[in-house]
Length: 445
Picture 1 (cartoon, one colour):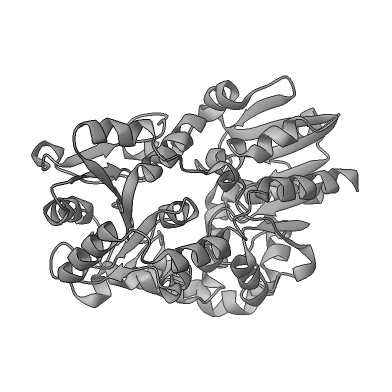
Picture 2 (cartoon, helix red, strand yellow; picture 1 turned 45 degrees about the vertical axis):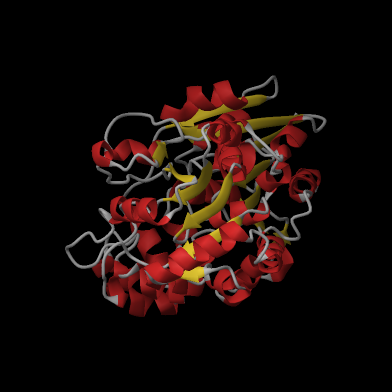
């Protein structure tokens, strides 16, 4: 048997890989045995969702320690991008900004050495039991910047096992810092991400494979689906809003992000026409502060995903099922317009041929340096804005864009198709085939 380990520590891996056509193709490969490695809490869920005769799920205890956090901060300090500069100023994703500032002068100098130092210092047998039990020919890391993924990939390389690392999301190369481990093969979504890997991270183009986005291979919109039909019977159509989430904007000691979505939902509920409802799809991996008891009647809220535990920490171990991804597609397809600040749901919608508006306005007057408008300057959002995806920065512009696009949904079709093709590498439905070829080539060599 040719054993392949696939990591699944981030909730979106289920959507990106396990629910994609790629995984079904891989299961049918002659002699393939697949081991999904995940946190212990998720083992039963993933076994039920994806287990098969040749698919096993191995739950592993948490191994992440202070040393992992140090290398994460070191790697973050070692890269300069517009996105990281903005995120640091707005305190997005920086748990120890003081440490990153202290490390920056050294990290910039040490950047080329970080993978060497990581391999030298990090424990090499934390997952020894896993490797000795399954004896894999290949480790496929589905989130090359994840701490657990970095550890497992590092141990595999130390054992002489072939490794493939995937850039999980469109923003990772400009927001996650440098590589702690460089895999033998790096899989990326598109030419934009490949260019970032080469120019920002000095990754050799010889090890990069551009495959597209595997889960988009099955993204198609029917003329009518159950969700759209349900609301049409009630005489309503749908406008979809994807919330920002509480953790995104933090400035100083105040949490500007907390309450943003509550205010934005109420604003949108006033702006949209009476012919529509505002369908709010909560982010699976973040909390959103809402006063739901006083929400307007034209607002519908849905929470996808399965959480493992209670409270705010449980959000970090949420998991998405294949049904959740199907529901996402159904929700986007059932909507006339998709509204978001900077979520990847914008690309999902564009791939499905739906109209998108990027929100750069706040529910109440806000200084620019605290405003969500700054998020449109992030590196991964710039291509969308540059290609002409509508971005609005005040309420009159929002109202104008909404009514313009409701009246003429195809007004920005050329820009939409251009962005979809760039982000999804041609959007040709063959990403799974290309990824399968990369994986099978690795276990043949």
